Image 1 (cartoon, chains in turn yellow, cyan):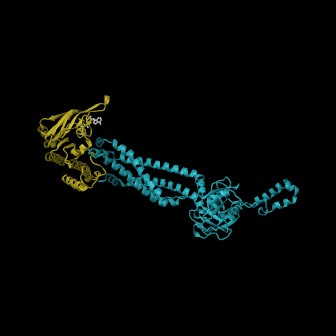
Image 2 (image 1 turned 180 degrees about the vertical axis):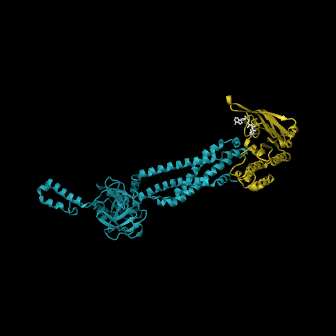
Image 3 (image 1 turned 180 degrees about the horizontal axis):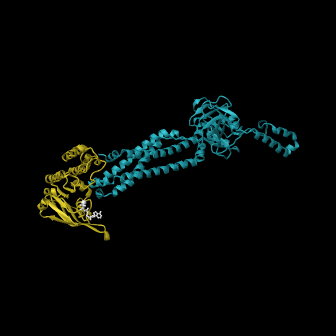
Length: 236
Length: 403
Ligand SMILES: Nc1ncnc2c1ncn2[C@@H]1O[C@H](COP(=O)(O)OP(=O)(O)OP(=O)(O)O)[C@@H](O)[C@H]1O
Ligand SMILES: [Mg+2]
């Protein structure tokens, strides 16, 4: 089985001494190519910490992150140029403030494509296609401040999948969406995962859409466990 | 896509206001440079206008532009007798301050050797040169006098017959041309009471002197006007200006004259240097220093502006880093904004300056060379000013996008 993401013993300790917080302890996860993973857990359990570690923006204190079979983070030590790696291989959707406030919706998607070598014209074309696909094409020229939370989130999703990443990381991407739209976004992730062979990890509280996921992990007090029987949770 | 432009488009009002602020600051820097040039230009303007090859002044003084210089009137004829001299003229120069409409009126008075010099060489913007030995004057526009206006000075009333523009004395006061006789009448205007007192004093001094005791009749003559008393020479003039014959060696003529014990001689160039290193030196330095300070202040203010502009974009910069934008994209955005601010500021400075500088009390001369120099300075300032913002942007971690 080809692995899109593999983490080994990820541990994150914030602060030191009296103020030390162990946000994540020995978290390991394998995500195969084309697999969509749900990450559940109560608030403060370390989900975002895990996701940002895998996303190479908040390196762990110890443990390893491998993406596409390549070791990219060994503890806090970068094994490659993380920023370039992110641009080429990782798509992000976060809980909030995903968009650049001075760029319109379509420009927010274009900026990533242009960074990746698209001409302005080609970038606009693809960005418009994606916005259309996500049902926000009519707001393409609006600034983020003029979009609803759900619309902003969909623009962020468009950007996250724009340059065919190997890994998509989404932190409660559907929190601002109604359940129908939320489900659509989850299905979109699944589609991208299956069609493009990307590994997808989605942090979610929305138990209604869990049937879409291939596997489910759960975090509690920084500890990661895999839910063996996804069906039980999905059905509950 | 140009991120710098997009950001500005997002908040054009703020950028415009900032650019206007920077522009005004740069206008003052520009103006300071112009005033600096103006002072230098004004200082040598009179010397250049007089256009003499040699200046003969009181021995060991630095000439009438720099200090009080007195030479006898007949020096004109002595100078004319020197081989190689084509012409020699009286030069009378002093500054007066009078009241006009309750406003102080400072005039740099310049005497013209009537009848050889009627002021034909003076570039007039209106009116005519002087046509009679008395009661006419040519005034600079900066004095605020109108053509045909009558100005009482001393015991006489003078009519403005001609107007000049930008004829400024070393001290920045407008120049007025009179005949030498009138210039001296203005300078040595003595009230009647003072004359009576002086005559009394002469009698008293005479009575105490040996000549007065031996020849009492002599004392009767003491009450005569000064011009009728041979021991009292005519009023002295400030200097004599000399033109040498074409082909004659200026330095040779200067050497001959400087051998005389009572005078010093300066060439045109020396006279210019004396003024520049003398009376205007401190003003020049002060303004030069002020200009440097203003430039530094402009740089600091621009740095702070660019820093705050960057602070406002921390979130966006973090997000750009998060999605993998290389540093050059982020640096480019800040640098381009700095440059745009510089360019707009410079343009606004230039436009404002065009309108405002003519209203300044002293002449503001903006040369093309200064404009180019300032453009370079602004480019460097913009670059340096963006460093603080760039430094801040480099500190931003992609993680901050999630805060
Ligand atoms: N920068 C930080 N400094 C110190 N402690 C932190 C920091 N970031 C997170 N933590 C702590 O780490 C723990 C895990 O936080 P994390 O944000 O990963 O939780 P989460 O599961 O994403 O919660 P939520 O569902 O509310 O988003 C929490 O106890 C949190 O207080
Ligand atoms: Mg979280």
